Image 1 (cartoon, rainbow, N blue to C red):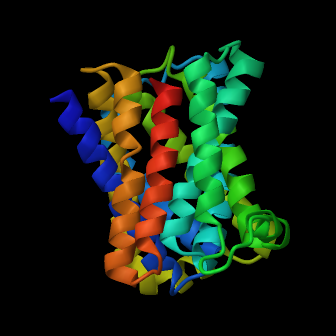
Image 2: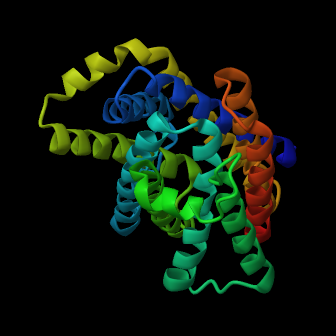
Image 3: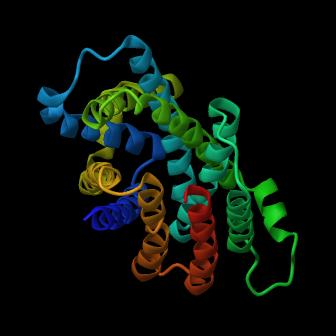
Length: 288
C-alpha cells in the first residue's frame, strides 16, 4: 500500500500544478498565493484536536522559518508559472533537489555518493535539454535564455527557497509528528503569504481575497490537492523507505507534463517528456 500512496501523492501534486496554472491565467501571483494560503489554513483547522500545542519553541521556530522560505518559494514559483509553460516550469523545478543536496552537505553534513553526483549530472542535462531552442542548432541558447529571462530567475530563486525550506522541514520532522507539523506549517505559511502581500502591495488583504474570488474553484482545487498529496506521502513514508517514496513522488513531473500537453496544448511535449525523464531519473539517483 505504501507504493500506492506514494504514486497517488504524485497524481495529486500534478493536479495541483494544473490547477495553479489555470488559476494564474486569471489572477496575479501574489493574490493567488494569499488566497491559496488562507484556504489551506482553513482546511487544516479541523485537525486542531490532534495537534500537539506543546511543541518546543525551538522547533516551532524551525517550522516558522521553513514556512517563510516556502512562502517566498511559492511566490516566485507562481510568478514563473504565469508566464511559462507548465511542461517547462514543473520539470525545471526538479533542480531544487540539487540545492537541497548541497544545503544538506553544508548544514547536516550529508555527503554525496558517486551515484548522487551522477543524478545531479542527469538533472543538469535534463534542464539544459528542456531549454534548448527547438528547430535551431544553437548549443549556448539555454545559457543565454537563463541569463536574459527573469521568469527563469524567478524559478531559480523559488527552487533555492524551497530547498532551504526542505532542510528546515527535515530538522523539524525528527521531533514533531506529521499532523502537528502540517498544521503549524500551514498556519505560518498563510501568515507569511499575508505579510509578503502587505509589504509588497501595501493594500488591505481583503482586496486580494476579493480579486482572487474569480479563481476560487481552481485555488480550492490547488490547496486541497496539495494537502491530500501531503497526507498520502506521510502515510507512504510510514510504510516504505523514505527514499522510495520520494522517488515515486517525483513521477508527478511526468504526469504534469503529459496533462499540460493534453489540456493546454503546449508544444514539443515529446521532447519535454524525454528531458523530464532524465531529470526524474537524476532525482531518483539522488534520493535512493
